[in-house]
Length: 420
Ligand code: GLC
Image 1: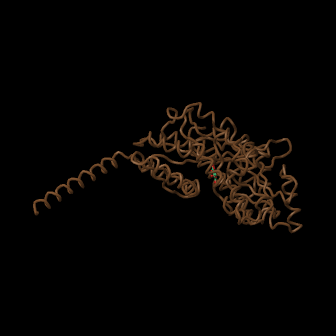
Image 2 (image 1 turned 30 degrees about the horizontal axis):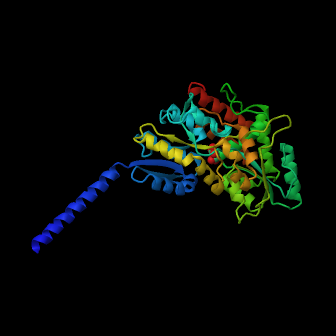
């Protein structure tokens, strides 16, 4: 009896050891892929990540680390771990403006051997831009993004097309006490201000940086653009608080029905159609105003996935990137969070068109998408512009003085790096 018990116990132990080591060896073959994303994107991706992990059980395990919301804070976090060497991530979700710097520093793995020209050709124009540096592909787009002017269809027959019209329409609605404020936008000293300023500067016929790489901030046209931005606040067409507004604050004001017009990115549409929105079903989109004779432009935004140089799992990371960016993932993200699709074909997708009649206008805005200066020194020159513009908007300095300072400092930054 005792012998039999010992025999059974030994058998059980053997079985346990075998199962554990089998499980262990299976686990050790699981490739662990870690991706760092800004918080809103990490949240919007969590269901897909769970699905990916179910579909790849025993082979790949994907982990998305959630970073800060703002682009500057995210980049600071990414850079600090890149500088320390051996970062804990295989891939990063990167903003379009980071790419030249990251690629020039040798932090990114070229993706040309994974994504061919045929695949790139399926992307809508705005999503095809900003993924290459020195003609190599370093980023696969996750969303398309472009600056938009949102307008209230219940308050005006057509959106303003010129800066003067924007002032006049807003003033009229404020005087008639129909809205508290006219136009909300991103006036805080951060990257969003550079995005708005680029659209306005171009709408007045100015340039931030000329195509030959020289700064052009002290031109008449840029001065008129920045004077107009300050006038928005001085006249009360934009609230004083706009100098503290990022995307979220502008969206809150517009969603509450406080403003007639808003500059924001496409994701705002989905938020404005929710049940708790005071302006649901009363929104149109167009592009930023431009002076008569000038063409409107929309600042190119967008985030994309890049593999870090030295990742131990590039193939598995590519599989994850494909999964997170395929057509069904794009549809899901658009329908739920309003993130703009990257595949051109989706702009004619009946299922999407049925719930998002503004898709054709989005496609149009993406045609006008204009990148911010594609230099590795972008973060520095944008910081200079934001700082000087903020001084003008808060009334601390004149537009001419601010722009003169911005021009000189930008030249110094670009020249000290050997020109760009
Ligand atoms: C959006 C854009 C990004 C831009 C940022 C500024 O996320 O996609 O390109 O830098 O807004 O706040």
